[in-house]
Length: 321
Image (tube, rainbow, N blue to C red):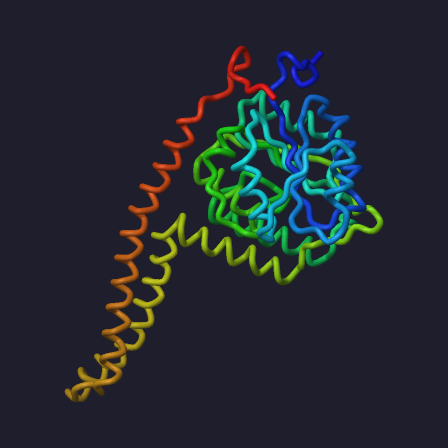
């Protein structure tokens, strides 16, 4: 009998399912995860559904709660704050993720002493919309270029977390950009991560995707930009400073040539423009240096909060339901 099947020794596993209008699929999700993780408690957080999601989930045996603030990020914030567990399995309620893979994800988290395991989706690609495929590849590549490559599926909604991760993660995102924030937080904190490939299937009949290719894609892109500014301020403001300095130099060169060849004083507005751009370049570089120090302090505080949470102890440290 594995540690996940033994009620006496198993960690307290919480399966977190954020839901919005998933009446058609939520019962199957609960049933499959109950079978895959018999000792887990399944929590369904209804995010203002207009259908019978709550009733169906409750009848299927889940603990049902509500989050009135619309958006997946708001739901994740509430779930992470409210629920106490040793291991957190987060999955969407649309029945597209492979529940039988859950024990493998949890075992990898526990056996390798990780803080997050990502369920990387494997499919025939026909299941994805073309816009979703392109967006996932583009955004994953962008995050990889800036923060490092440690995942192949940035936007997967199927993840397993340690208690340390959940209780040290300050959720700021309000919508679908939460997946990006989760990954960047783990990368910036240098947390031990893992990834397991999992099958991905099409939605159940009657279930409709809530993800807008363009609207949510731009929101995720905007979130990546904000995270780059906040977590890499020296690089962000340094690039701006470099561009301003180059424009200032390009603007000033003709002025020096004119003065050298004719002895005439350059036109005042052009000289002011070149000088102003140079000053802005210097100010941008200064802002980058200051904010880089602030970011380092914030990262140290988050790290200290992370270290305050004890690592799980297989003999005595697990919580009990």
